[in-house]
Length: 500
Image 1 (cartoon, rainbow, N blue to C red):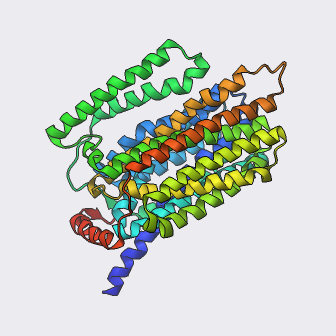
Image 2: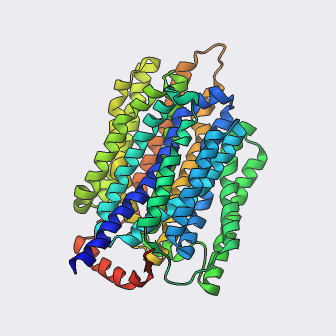
Image 3: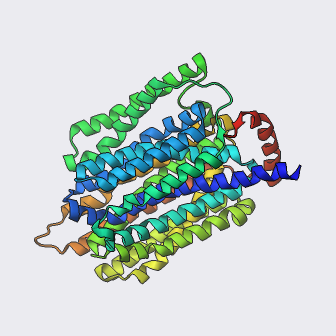
């Protein structure tokens, strides 16, 4: 009997390693591109708008595809969609590395974001359906640590690959490095990840997909393109028009639920208090982090004139702090203090932003990397207290048969926030840079001013996150209750898990 029970445990943790490696690949790909932006601009002649689209195109395709990607996993199998997504992501990475001009690179990045939207929702869904409730806290703690690792590896790997100019390829290895990882993920995932899908036979909601995609594009495209186009009237009209399209989408989803029970978005999820509250937190937190990471990179490399490697090393204290705090929050702090840990994280991260503002203003263009260590550690610790337990809080009460849709919504909300943050960087950062006169002003101090101006927005967003967290459950689920829920869930869903 023991041999029968040990094998599933071993398989479960191997599957976790595979899906987390795929998630790490996605996380690294975002940060690795940010650090290489100035080099890409220099070698390809890309404009500032094209640079923004290299990042925003990925985020846009990712955001609009995540809800659909999550539901497709529920219908056709999470393992199947995971493998399709990681395969497509690998091909798109090769196209990015082979792109000959900025336009082709933007197009390949959009494809990469679309394939990531198939892969990433399955990661949380596979974890949610593979691990019982009493183990998920530990697993999501590891997931939070993986976020910190990705934040650290991305800038460092991007800096090394860009600055060392492997084989004379310049910036291209930052994308080509995904090829061996993606191929390994395909091979190991096909062997160790177990298939799962929703117990009820769901149908693909094509009209819902069209409406959701249209509404998100109408909102995000003008925000991303508005500055380059001079904030035209059509942009504001599109953003305003997204509201009634969202309303039509919600009305159609309600009707779809009554007709055949297969809506793209399971609206009943929003009756789960922890899920609804967590969605609001994810959106606001995504906005704050979306602003910070873009302007931070531009500040160091374009404003201070630092090399990619120097800028990448500056982020190491942040990433280490995220990893340490993420592990502590899930294992030690949240079980004892509950929601207060996440709220403390928002306040600590906001305090780090304020310290950064003070140091940037005091030292100006002469600031050194070691002088940034304090605010980066503080901000990283605050982020670690949030990212690991937040996912578990949002998904803890979600029925397993809707885990793909729920994880797609979580990731969509976060990416929507990041895309909004990228769009708002036009207001927070580029508005200050554009207002400067290069003939009369040194641009170094201008970039410092733009950076500190943006950090006030980041701090304000984090205070809003703190306030929204009052809607989250006060306490984390008790282990005894979690184990009882796990047994109930496993008994209800075990026939739907198919090992392949």
